Picture (cartoon, one colour):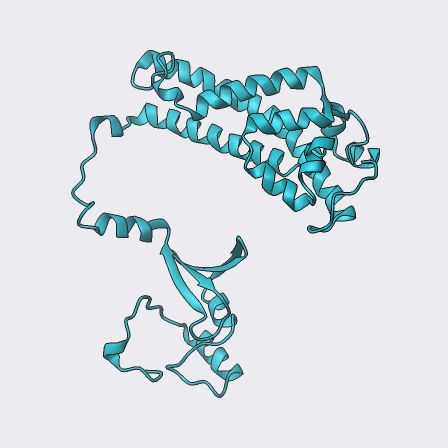
Length: 282
């Protein structure tokens, strides 16, 4: 097939192509016959493939298999990994892992599973809040930060390497934060560190005891409400950054020296309420 002998090839993915899709492809590619190489994206789109770009690498998903795509031509598509149930099935079929047994501390009863779900939801909220902060480049435009980073991209990449606490310190260099929000940020940072760094093994919140589980439910319920308030504030700063960036900046352009106008702070809603510049921060 295609110049190879059967003993020279291995089938890594077999997929039935519906007759209608096959006929359309051959009609628009009359010089290509089955079996043969496929050129172009159309056939994969009609087979239900999904496409995205991650870290400048084009990826294609067909069912539970992910491929990297240089281009839609022969040898331009490489399978890189399984995901979803295909990944689970492969893991379970590994003879070195299939015999492993769960220990008692790895098994959660029905009630505890709900607490684990709450824990996961709060962790996801933490990550979203930190995403909003790290991508709110207007919060990091103090004089010190502008001396450290030349372009907006430099600043964003630098902020991704900062801890949440360090990002908050950088914000304070350029902005006066409304006192109530400042107190809420401090409380969130304290509770976030407790959540991320082992709350379920703390004596007060020990998930292995009934008392600890009840304490944990109360903590996570408060954290959820508190986190949503902060998420709204920092989402506002993120939107303000996006608006300013679209209208004034290209990704490689140097950080400008002119004033950051009131217009963007007003249009961002809560941003103008919670943050006020210490000086013309742009």
